[in-house]
Amino acid sequence: MSRSKMKALVFPKAFDVCLVETDIPKPGPDEVLAEVRSCGICGSDIGIFEGSHWIIAHGPGGHGHESGCVAVEVGKNVVGIKPGDRLARMGACYAQYTKEVNVVGHGKDEKTGALPIVRNDLTVDEISFADAVGCALNCAERAELDRISGRRPKAAILGLGPIGLLLAQILINRGVEVAASEPYEMKRELAAKWGAEVFNPRDFSEGKTKKSAAETILEEFGEADAVFEMVGHNDTLLEAIDIVRPGFRVLVFGAQTIQYIPYEKCRRKGIEIVYPEAMVNSKEGVDYWTQALDLIAGKDGKRLDIESLITKRATLEEAADAFRNYDREKWIKIIVEPWRED
Image (cartoon, rainbow, N blue to C red; front, side, top):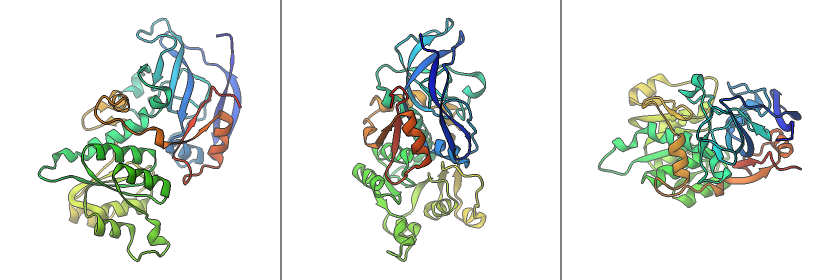
């Protein structure tokens, strides 16, 4: 490579993002330098930008982790990766180049380090969804709906962000009956297209119905064997506790700093509250990188609808504006393309 400088986003403090020019990192003998072709803006990235998430990422590239990259330089000790390979699992990807590997919050690799994963059978956009699909897979597995026999399992998803929408697809493809609560129409329409029964929680707050969102779901859909809280609000968690069938599970994936949990109600219903990790099943000790990539490739059943989730593409400069003015109603997944100049 003849270039020595690259563009990158940095996040120096809450509600602050800057586009800078910085040195292209130099890979060591055990590292891979990759060009970032596709990086999805994750809900956790928005939380980090707003200062509401526990992860802090101030370096060039920030916490960009939903990435599809191409190897450009490979350290002398690295085996199985060559220039031109398409790579999953890269981090610090709000930058034109990176040598970081995405291991934050991903269990066994956090202390030992890890190499990127080669997937030349997928596009860089498809690869960039691996992290979100892996999180959705982990949520689905921790629900353990396969323990139900003699009837069709029922699940409710509260919050249809990208991971909630991917989770809905995974559960529906597995034969689970799914209800979903989401205030934004575009997201409800996608879930309904795939076969979910959808509800608008704003109907209650706007006075269109006297019943709360939880009461409406219970009346029209019934109790769920698993309820997934994907929003990160305590009110949504309380709704999940109301909706879940006694003896079954609420799975909390939405990120918040502290929670209020009604002990008496939970105890009387005998429910379990489970906190799935990002990509690692803490019960089974497995991560979902390969399974997620295979699912995206259609190797493990019906191919996921990824393209419908992409509602905007952005350069690094446009991405900085998107962080400052993030529109949760109009955007599902923004794909940042750092290689593309303004």
